[in-house]
Image 1 (cartoon, rainbow, N blue to C red):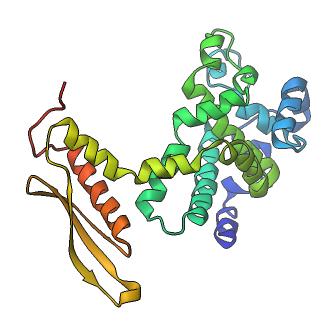
Image 2 (image 1 turned 90 degrees about the vertical axis):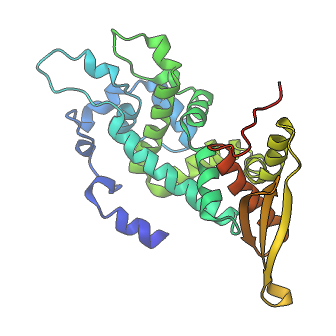
Length: 278
C-alpha cells in the first residue's frame, strides 16, 4: 500500500508538497491567514489535532461554489471546493477500503464494496459534516440562501470530502488517516453494517413470507476437497425455481452467498408474479 501511494503521490496533482496555486487559486499564501476566519482555523485545528499550516487550502475546502456566482469584478475568481472534493473523495475511498480490507479478510470484493458504500455515501458524509459543524463554517455567496446551503446534504458532503483533501495536502496521508479514524471509523457501527450485509437469508425469508410462498430450500449440490478443506456448493430454491447458487468453505457462508444472489434476482425480476400481502 505504501509503495502504491508513493507512486500515486509522484503525480503533480497529488503531491503533498504541492503549492496553493495547484488548486487553481490566485490568492497568495501570505494573505491566507487574513482570509481564513480565526474561529474557523481554531475549529479545524481542534478537529485535526494539528495546526492549519496552509490556511488557503482549508479556506478553499470550505468555499461553496455559490461564491463564484457572485464574482462580478475583473479580479481573479476565488476558488470553490470542487477540486478538493475530487481529491478528498479519492483519499477517503483509499483509506476506508484499506481499513475494511484489513478488518474483514474473509470478505469478497462485493461485500467490501457494499460495506464501503454504506460508510462513504452522500447521506453519511453529510452526517459526519453536520456532527463536525462544518456547515457553520462554510463560505457562502452573498446572494445565496445561506441557511439552506449550510444544512444541505450535498453541500455538507462536498465540504467533508474537500476537508479530507485539504488535510491530505497539508498533513499528508497520515494526517488524513488520523482524521478519518477519529471522525468516521470511530462513529460507524461496523458490526451492524456487516450484519445487515450478510443477513440475506432473513431478507429472502421475509420476501417469501410476504408473498405467501413456501420457505426457501437450501440444497447441497456438491462437496469437494479433503475433509479439512471442503468446498460446498449450495443452491437455494422456492416452489421448484432455483434462485441462487453459492460456493464457500462453510455451508453457512455458501447459503448466504446463494441467498444474496437470489435477492439480487428478486429485486429486479419476480419469477413468481406475486405481490406482497397487504
